[in-house]
Length: 259
Image (cartoon, rainbow, N blue to C red; front, side, top):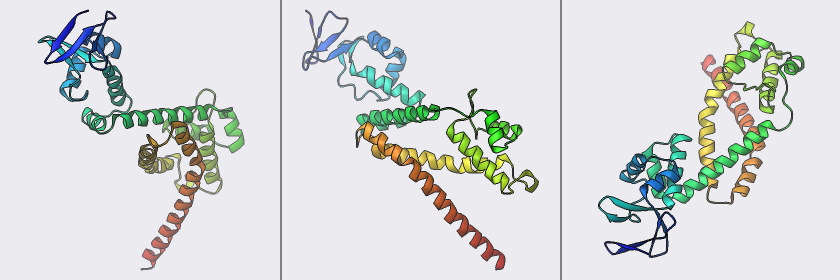
């Protein structure tokens, strides 16, 4: 067994394709091994090192000018960086700040977001979907209206039909049309975009606040229970607040007209 010295730090060859720190017996990897296990090129890893994304580099053991061994924990950290880049489109400067502050919390955030997304997708697929024919028959919705709603992304049908949220949207639009909100008065499916555009930033803030407060504070399963419990009350809250705001705006409009 060979022992290599580096400014007082020691590493030893284990015979398993890597080395280990003498203190703590922590595994070390060559750059080629680190690249292979992480699925990231050596050039990208060196860039991460230069940008401080892998910590201060104090755990790196240099055995010569051109030879170094890296902690095996870098594999997980590199994978986390790539996920933040590719799945959440976070710039490296933001990733570096988050990892410097609390890498454990970053992992907890990702795990919770993944679980929420998995449950939402599973919920969307639960039960039977409603076919286009069934929707047209049940709600009297013209085919061209359904097609336009899908084109602008308000509805997201599959070959199996519409999920429960799509059906609720269709039901609401059908009720609007039955109450007189029709094309003759200038009401079209494109009016739904106003609500979507207003809700998108609200939903982004909601997710950030919700995940940020729960991740790392409670167990993932408990966090999921809290998220699920808040779904219906949130619908009621938004509906009630919209009604109050609408009434207030109508009063303001009347006052302005009278003045």
